[in-house]
Length: 201
Image (cartoon, rainbow, N blue to C red; front, top):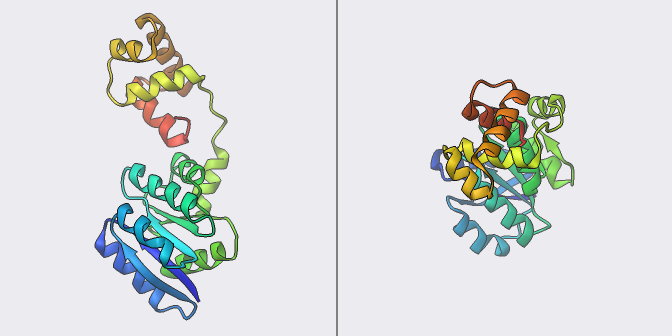
């Protein structure tokens, strides 16, 4: 029996995944959690084999949960359940330590099979997202261009970016212009979004 944790701040989604597991003879939902605080305090005692972690909308807090689970319970295989199917989302999840990357839109039986495969030690990725990731070229941005574009994407004006990076405003403008040109984007916000989706920031 493959013991599985389910982590999502959406109650309906938690219960849906638990229902999927309940109809499979070899899968068992040992617990469902709504917050990372709950799962981290109790997961060590549940002897689970797999954790299904819903990445939510922003992914930030959920990826932190993934990193903490992987660090605290290295024997636990984590499957990320994502509504976002971009190369950036996949890369960030892999860096956090997931062994599986599934789409919220996948069929219940497909999710069950992903859980089985990661429990056997396989790395299992949502195929369309994996293919899109392979199709994305290497990061064309320099480290400084990435830093400037990341801050610009948060809505920070040029002057504040320059202060944060200890650079002249003109230098920051040049970095952003070069990044926009490389990414073929008309403005810094669109360039930041494209770079984020590609996993370059």
